[in-house]
Amino acid sequence: MEQFVVKNLTKQFNKTSGIDKINFSFNLTDIIGFVGANGAGKTTTIKAIFNELKTTAGEVTVNGKPFKIYNKDNKIGFLPDSTNLPQDIKVKEYLELVGILSKINPKELKERITLLLDMFDLTDSKNKLIRELSAGMQKRAAIAGVMIFKPKFIFMDEPTANLDVEARIEILNIIKSLNQKGIGFFITTHIIDELEKIINKLIIIEAGTIVYEADFNHKKDNIMEIYQKYAGGWKERKNLGTKLDSFFAE
Image (tube, rainbow, N blue to C red; front, side, top):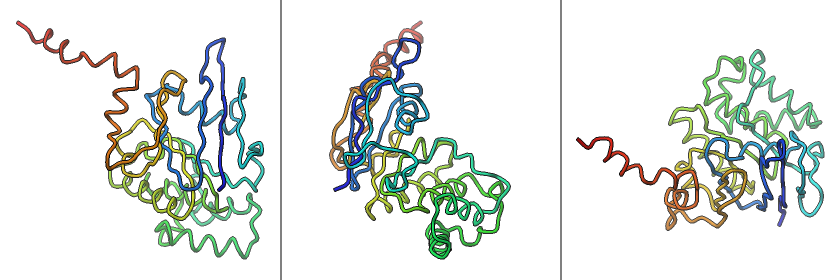
């Protein structure tokens, strides 16, 4: 089975580690939840993997070969935390642009776009400008853009950020459905409770270091309890009840 592996990934900023010796792997059946507080190192990890930051040490491989972001054979998709879609082109034009940049055969591209518009419920909006779409619809369009070249692994950085409850549920259902079709996911978020029903592996990062990594079963595991146990930042606030008692004491 195909596998994506990150080994000893390290990025130092001014003699301090943004991330330190990050290790994990996942395959096409996995949905990994990569969680931590703001500033814990989630986005830095993603940027280091995709070479947006020059790493200090470590390696990233796909099926045992070095990961190169511009090698289309790797079939790796990336949805950043801020999708930044071009706002003044139509949805269909955006998908066509992504397909052309991905060097997909024109006939095949036309077929894929038709299927993706239907899959993500965007057919009726295909001639709307991106800026005319709601935040949830823009996110769906962004995922459709990632799907245009049929990726095997997709990295998502805060995919439900700034979405309302209905849109968040919709995006999570899309992720679950795509995973059932054989796409592996690596999802970073600080909204941890919403991952509980879809992930099968959980990684917690704290101050640039992985402090917890294990398989996750939503029928028996509680993501909040695990996070409270292993996230150091949370431990510092566990005595809040005592502090409140002191505050309200007469």
